[in-house]
Structures are given as C-alpha cells and as structure tokens.
Amino acid sequence: MTLENRSRLHRSIVYGLVVIGALAFARSSGAPPTFSGAPGELDCTICHSDYALNSGNGVPEIVAGPWYRPGQTLPFQVRFAANPGMRNGFEIAALTGGPGTYLYGFAPVDNTTQSMGNPTPNQYLTHTFDGHMLSSWQATFTVPNPAPRAFTFYAAFNQANGDQWLTGDYIHTRSRTLTILPLIASGTPQPGQTVSLQLDVASDAGFAYQMGTSLGNSGIPIGGGRVIPLSPDLVLSLSLSGALPTVFQNYAGLLDAQGQATAALALPGVLELAGIQLHNAFVTASGAGIATISNDEPFTIVP
Image (cartoon, rainbow, N blue to C red; front, side, top):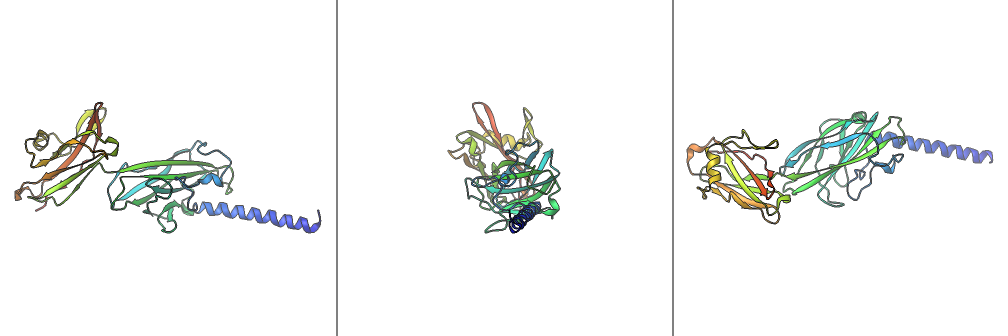
C-alpha cells in the first residue's frame, strides 16, 4: 500500500469514527422521527443492533389511560419501571390503526422531552439532551375532538450502556391502547332539559346494559375488588326500577352491533333542583356476569 493510499485510508477511518460519534451524540439529544416501532415504522435496532429487540432486562412501560374524553389533554409517562441503562432514550407516537393513521397532540411539560414530526411538530415525542440520563419522562397528549373510539401509543426505548457509541445498547418496544370513555354526558343539565348519556363499549357489542343515577358515588362493591361508582340511595332505586321511564329514558337495553347505546335523563322542571350533583354510570352483562363497569359521569344541575 502506497503512502498516499494509507493516508486516504486513515482519513476514511477518522471520518467514519467522527460520523459515528456524531450520530451517537445526536441520539443523546433525541431520536429522529419514524423510529417509534409503530405500524409501518422502524425501531432503534436499525442503529443499535448488537442485541435482538426486547432482549434486555430493562422493564419499560407507557403509563396512561385507560380512558379519555374528546378534546382532553392527557398527562402520561414513559419510563423504565426497572433496570434502566446508564443513559436512556425513547420515542413515542399515537396511531388509530395501521401505518399512517397518526394522531397529532404531543407536548412537552419540561426540558427533558421535545415534540417533533413532519408535517406537524407534535407527531412524535422524544427525549432531549437534558433528559437522556433519566429513566422516566412526563408529557401530555391532547386528544382531538371529535375523537376516535380508540388509539394506541407506540414507543421504542433505548436502554443504553452510556459509552456514547451505537454498540452495547438494548432496544425495547411497547404499546398501550386507550379507549374513549364508556359514558359521556352532553346537553345542559338544567331543570326541564334533557341530558344525553352516550354509552360506548366496543368490546361488549350486543351485551345487555343497565344505567343508574345516584346522588353520590361512595361505591357499590360487587366482589373481586370491583366497585360500581354510585351510591345506594333513593335516586338510584328510582333509576333502576323502571317506574319513571319518562325521566330515566332507555336506562336498560342492549348495546348495538358497534357496542353503543344512548340513554337520557329528562330533568323535572323544578327550579329547586339547581345545585344538586348527580352521578351516572352503567354496567354491561353477558352470560358470565358483569363485564364492564363504566366511569362515573357526574354533572351538577344548573339554574
């Protein structure tokens, strides 16, 4: 090998090392878009390829949900619940289905995370340089309104050994699916007006349901640690009895083929009702017993 060829080889090696080092530093400042492990995307093993995906002893997780309201800004957390690396990172995206079905709503709450994306900047969330030595990150996600019935967070995590290179790091992927609140009230809760109660449990299509309304939400245990978020009071008894069908409308029935139904509470035109808070919830049942217990959906009657 001539002196000129040796010099050229030396420059190539140095250049390669500089590029690799720059890439490692860039990753410590955040992962590039499209590496969340979501449908149609790659994950971080494209660069950190020493170990098979999900083969390390790290225990990453997405802490969120399980329910959301249209337009709600949801706090969530991504973290290593156990065995983080010396330095760590992540990228997260939200999709309603297959490749390309992105939702856009990520926002940082401090300088340890950053949102990014193309064409909109809130398509992904990743760590920053200030956050790459942490093992837990918090942020928010704003659900669109109107909202999908469900969406899934997909995240890729880097459990890094801290040597600032692309070698020796373990990559993990996780997902978490959230669904729209099983019970959502709409309308003006005013004497003489009707409040609509939308039931939505896609997994319980065709199941029987029973709505209930009470003055409190102290809870009604049903065994197995499960609690219906209502109180055993006179209003609940009336709502379950079927004796006032013009007030407690469609409080029992079957969810349709999409797992949906609509009940309604027609408030009596009594002005003295203003200021009273009512709690609303439902259960679904199949041959195996109670399947779903909904959220408590309270509202206060206004003048």
